Image 1 (spheres, rainbow, N blue to C red):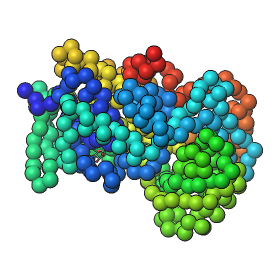
Image 2: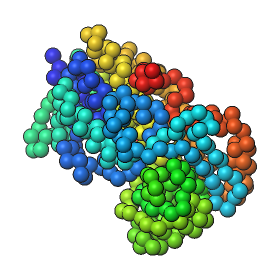
Image 3: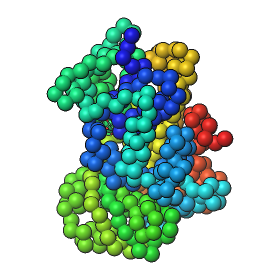
Image 4: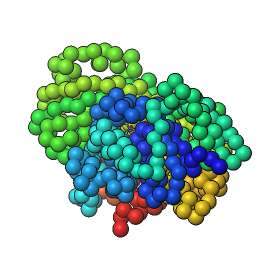
Length: 407
Ligand SMILES: Cc1cc2nc3c(=O)[nH]c(=O)nc-3n(C[C@H](O)[C@H](O)[C@H](O)COP(=O)(O)OP(=O)(O)OC[C@H]3O[C@@H](n4cnc5c(N)ncnc54)[C@H](O)[C@@H]3O)c2cc1C
C-alpha cells in the first residue's frame, strides 16, 4: 500500500491550496513536500508582491474557509479599472457597479495569502507537511509512484497513488518526468514594488501602456499601491539600481501625472517574464498543477487565478473519487480533469500572450490601430461586459468549488 493517496510536490500558493482542499473531509492521506518551508519569512512564493484575486479566486478561498474574517480583512477591492495608452486619447473604463458587481476582484499580498494557507495547512490533521525537503527523483511503480527527497541531509523515499507537481514555473518534477516545455522568453522583466501615490482615484486599478512597456498600479487602500513596471530585460538592472527619487520622477513621466503623484517607493523585486507551456500535463499517476502547468505573463493578472480554478476542479474530482473509495491516480479521472480545464487554460494563456503582442509595441501604425480599438471598445458596453466578466473568472463552466460558493 502506498504511503499517501496524494503527494503534492511544492507548497507554494497552489500546492498549499490543494493540500487545504483535500484535507477538508478527512478522506485522503495527503502529504505536501516543500524545499523552502517551514520558514515563511524568506519563502520565494510568499513575498510582498500584491496579487489581484479575481471573483472566482475569492469564491475558492471562501470555500477553503480563508476569506471571511481572514483574508477579507486585509484585501483591497478593485471597483474600477482604467486602461490607458501614453500620448494617446484612448481609454477603456470598467466599473464594477455598472456590471452589477460589488468589485472586480481584490488585491492581497502574496505573503498574507501564503501565511493564511500555511496556517490552515498546519491545522489540517490529514495533511502531512514534509519540509524542508527537496524532491530529487521520481520513479513509476506498478500501482503508484515513488518520490525520493532529501530532508536535510537525510535521503527519504515515499510512495503515493498520485503525484501532483505544483513546484513552480521551472518545475524540477516536470523535468524529472521528462516532459518537454515550449518556452517563449518575453525578454522583459517585471519590477514590483509598493508605492504611495497621492491624489489617486480610490479603489481603481490602472493598466497603462507606454512605448517602454506596460505599467500596472493596483490599489492597496488609501495612497498605497502595488506597482508592476515592465521593462526590457537589458534595462532591468539599471531600473533596479536607480535611486528612489529618480525612479519616482521616471514614473511621473511615464504616467504623465494621469494616475496621481508618486511620492514614495518601497523595496523592489525583479521577475524575468516567460511563457512556459509543457507538452503534457498528465503522465502515469502524475499531474502538473499551478505554474508548472502554465506560467504566463502577469499583464492581465490572471496566472494565479487560472491556477486556482485548476486546483478547485482537481480537488473536487479527487475528493469525490476518494470518498467513493476510488483510485486518485486513475487515468480516466485525470483526463476528465484536463478536459474540463483546457478551454479556460487556452483562453487565458492565449489572451495574456496576445496582450503582450498588442501592448508591448513601438510600431506607430500598430499604436494608432490599438488606440482606435480601445476607443471603440470603450464605446461598446456589451463587449466590455464580456471582457470584464471573463477576467473575473466567473464566466463559462465553473469548478464545483466556485459554484458551491455561489449558493
Ligand atoms: C510579477 C508577478 C506578478 C503576478 N501577479 C499576479 C496577479 O496579480 N494575479 C494572479 O492571478 N497571478 C499573478 N502572478 C502569477 C502568480 O504569482 C503565480 O501564478 C503563482 O504564484 C504560482 O504559484 P505556484 O504555487 O504554482 O508556484 P510557486 O509559487 O513558484 O511555488 C512552487 C513551490 O515549489 C517548491 N519547490 C520547487 N522545487 C521543489 C523541489 N524540487 N522539491 C520540493 N519543493 C520544491 C518551492 O519551494 C515553492 O514553494 C504574478 C506573477 C508575477 C511573476
